[in-house]
Image (tube, rainbow, N blue to C red; front, side, top):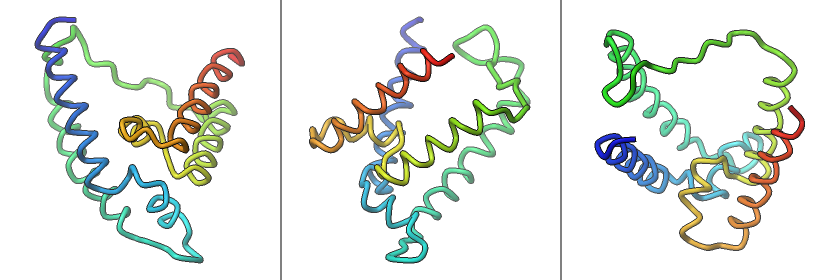
Length: 137
């Protein structure tokens, strides 16, 4: 990977991390309150998701018109379109983990720098899940 690609990846990751922190996605209680529609529901993350879609959709449209990426030989668009047990099972486990823990992989990695015990336990469990999923394949 060349220096321009590394710099672009670093800046993209930093921007993503700052966005997660500013939006409250790194606060498990905020995420859990968003998912608790019958209790202390907090709809503010719906606006975060809507904002993310509003920013991302034009980017995807623009990229779809380009001949190729700046730092690679070709785009790596997803090709699978079928729903199978692995996909649905993975989505269910991801959703359950997100709802119970209040974290998903992006926000939890942004939260690691805080060093909270709960965050570290979640990261350990997440990494264990990655290894188990790979072994199950």
